[in-house]
Length: 391
Image 1: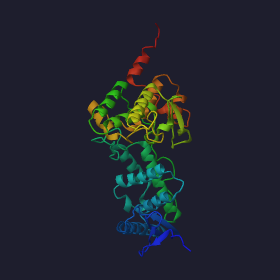
Image 2 (image 1 turned 90 degrees about the vertical axis):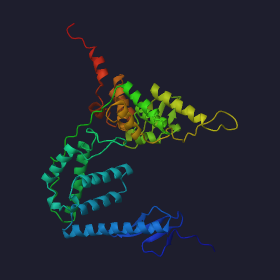
Image 3 (image 1 turned 60 degrees about the vertical axis):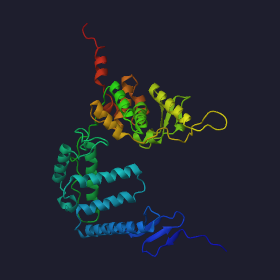
Image 4 (image 1 turned 45 degrees about the vertical axis):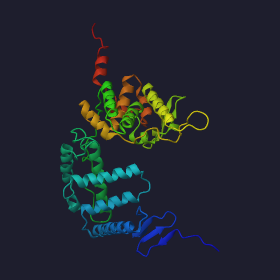
């Protein structure tokens, strides 16, 4: 009788096993009395052994961190390691949230010299305030992708980022309290966070946006036109960056004049957005180009695969920043193009709740009123001309 091959195959190397179905190597460890399986992301045995050694060293450091916390000798670097492990262990986190939580820890380590060796008892409220105020003044050195220098307005000094990092610090200290190294979390009371005022979008006039898109398209690169179309798509539909990447031709309904957007940020993110004239013209051009590039079947007109992505590129940050520099304005981000859609809709007279639904906001327009309900200079002047007092 023929027996099926086992799923896991021993390699003779301690803690290194191979999945016979996929051929991929895995490391097998025991941490906190639980067995953990870690994919080493390779089918090559030699590479797997190297990665296994690195992972074994990392887990040993994690075990030592836990022991140091229990013994009352841990440093903030140990608590950061344990906190990062908790992030990895949580099954309820979306990949985007997991990545953001990691980045908050990385920001703290990058901007706080000596943080890894700092004893938890020395992480006082005043120490956090000093760090917070310095980052608020100097930023983290963040640079918009594609920009040649750090922007004074987008440099990592936002209140939102700093407040999230403070939350991360509190959770690290919570671990020390749970394990008995500290008796209380001195960072728990209020007063550490900054007042978070949503950033007002910095948008050029509509004609300048058109110049930016033209600059991207005329750059002469292989993906210059797809990058320009990507930016136009964001400005004409209000999609978030990740949403735009996922749009397929099945999501475009020319008959009804709508675009179906599969969002992931909130329950309201899944939505239908009407195609404004500029969006329809862009999508019709892209659809025609895709048809012409498709080998026609034996009979009938060429068809476009409904599962195919609408956009040929997944981002255009570098092209966008370069075009802004040529036009002579501050670098714009992908999200600024979403802001441009919202602002243009408001200036056209669309009511706030409707624009909020187009953007996938779940608050009915509250955030929109605080962030987007402003007007560009030309529109403001045009509206002021309508005001008649005492005439």
